[in-house]
Length: 111
Image 1 (cartoon, rainbow, N blue to C red):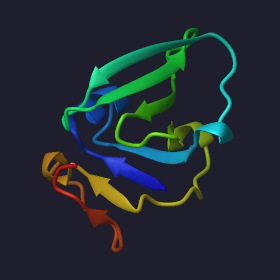
Image 2 (cartoon, one colour):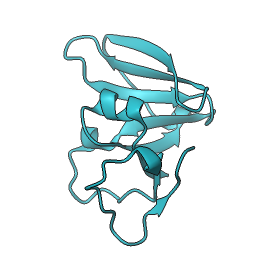
Image 3 (cartoon, rainbow, N blue to C red):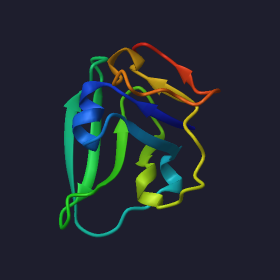
């Protein structure tokens, strides 16, 4: 599952107009090295916990209360220009007005 999100929290966390993330079963993802975690309440009212590298501050994985058993990985970490496009843009109501999406990407106004 791959999606983008334009909620204000994702904009702030990514430093961009949206986040772009892939989801994997928790057991399929391994993180090593020193990690710090940060938990917040999202616009939907559920928690989101993000692990980041203690050395460089880069986002590594997130876990969402709404999606137990899955881990969210920022697609930018794969450094792969051929990575699958997002299937859905969540919080489309908060997207930057210049952001036109390619055909086939579903939009959800909130989440």
